[in-house]
Image (cartoon, rainbow, N blue to C red; front, side, top):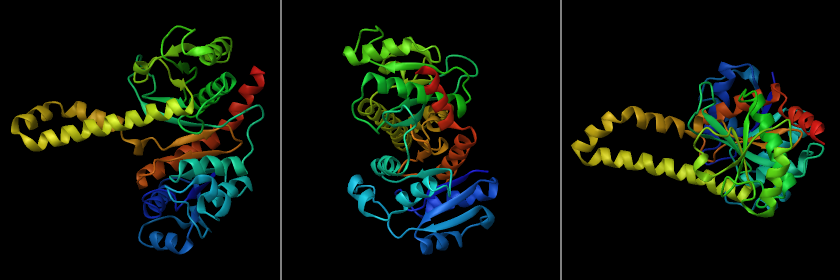
Length: 337
């Protein structure tokens, strides 16, 4: 079983929810976890829950990186739990990292201690999100990258994002031939300026990629593409828009149900659909977002992650290690050079 280094001090609900999530995993699976952070606080949480001590070890780190801290200075100056967890993987003490901490610090810590895969120019932060399914057996989740590790990209980097996303979807989501789309402002291959037109041309010429062309914003929640490629600025805005819409819809239905009996009756009739919407937008079941492009993986969880979310992220990380996701990316890159 893989060993997953978990940043116990990262996130809004750390260390309590992080440690509880790891404790649950230790009881349900054979995954080995290395909890990294303030040993005294970690041990105090463990003493209040059930866990299997044979599957949990603790690595002490005295500092933590706050969610609002400037990432570069924090990674450079602090002996923080996140940095120690990444370093533990680089040194061979663990196989992958899970953190709900500062996103920028996660990317920079990986850049500091992990090597990029041969041929990869820039790493990408990928995220799954719910969408409609167009055919039976299609995964309920699509993968979008980049969603925050970059701001602007060149065409070659977008092509590499497609290769990385394709490999991740094949290995982790078990999609044999993922449909890959390029996020753009129109379906025509000349749309979006020279950079996107060049990326479109290169992706169309890759036999190892099932490229379905440009996808527009209204295609994101449909089943046309399993992997959506974009620059980090655009991807981050799109992802936050999804989160915002789901939260507003849920708040509106909750508020409506509290105000009028007629509305409550109507909501009862719509309860199945509302429940489905809530399930689809529940980030806790999706684990986290992988940082792809390095020789090792880091799964970045939502900052508000609960024990359930952390536990699922640890399982996703272990699955990605077992399925050799970085090796799959490297092999695909080697065949496209």
